[in-house]
Amino acid sequence: MITVFDAAQKAHDPQFFLSSGAAQPCPEKPARVDALLAAVHRLGGAVVQAPDAGLDPIIRIHPQRYVTFLQTIHARWTRIPGASSEVIPNIHPANRTDGYPLSAVGQAGFHQTDTSCPISAQTWAAAYASAQTAIHGADLVLGGEGAVYALSRPPGHHAFAELAGGFCYLNNSAIAAQRLTDAGRKVAILDVDLHHGNGTQGIFYDRPDVLTVSIHAHPERYYPFFWGYPEERGAGAGEGANLNLCLERGTADKGFLAALDAGMDAVRLWGADTLVLALGLDAFEGDPFAGLAVTTQGFGQIGRAVAAMGLPTVIVQEGGYLCPELGDNLEAGLSGFIR
Image 1 (cartoon, one colour):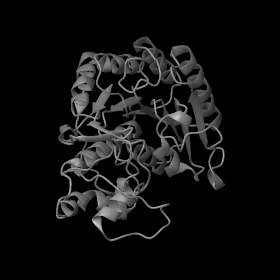
Image 2 (tube, rainbow, N blue to C red):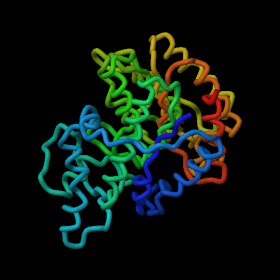
Image 3 (cartoon, rainbow, N blue to C red):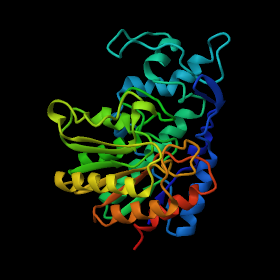
Image 4 (cartoon, rainbow, N blue to C red):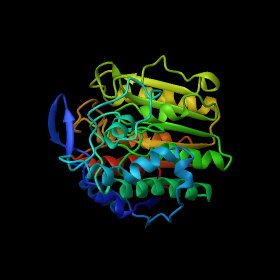
């Protein structure tokens, strides 16, 4: 299996993370990459860097106004007397149909849903490289590869079209899906991260051409709280093209795999011919977020089950945080795709 990775992604090193009112070190650290790459090397296969496909594939998902914000906000922020070293919002609009401010502080509140997506001088370059990694993964699948692993970091599935959040800035899985759709594929996104893929859902919610399926801890008491409920099925032309499979906290392999079966049934029924697997490893029983209890062996079962669908698949890295088994979980998940 080919892995796509760009070392530029490691330059993003967020320091700030606010959880339950307390400032803590951000868990989305560059060291995640080292653990994931070690697993890739154990599995073998080529590791390639993506060529630069430019901004066009990104702007297919994220409007230019938002891209310009990500490119320029840190430099603008540092001109504010007494500003923090990272861009962190302290005010938000009631909704995003309100006025669009010119100030850096106002735009940060408009474009950042929470405090877990701080922006430093290196964030744009890393997010751009992460998106290019997913784009090239899609291109390799379009070129005939059966499955490609895009080691995208920072992750993406909490990023809406114009909103960063939850460690995410550009929605890599959505960008890859759009790349495939533009090439004539009928695409489903299957998100197996601990947290609901709210940004991905939001991007495609009123579209009938991409199926979005998310398996995640129930949001009534868990991030992202406001999205990811079973009754959210899409809107307008997209009604019926979104499926949320919510799990109780602490759900282990058996319950997760039952939900996976339901999600894969939806993908088959919808008639997808290509899959984007948004691979979160934070459903692991030992992950720092401690929401679900999937085992390393469970990730192996997830990988084998998805691979058995026989669909060309772009595997895009989402969550999964530092713990001794992080690389083992990736190795188990990817091994099912290796023939």
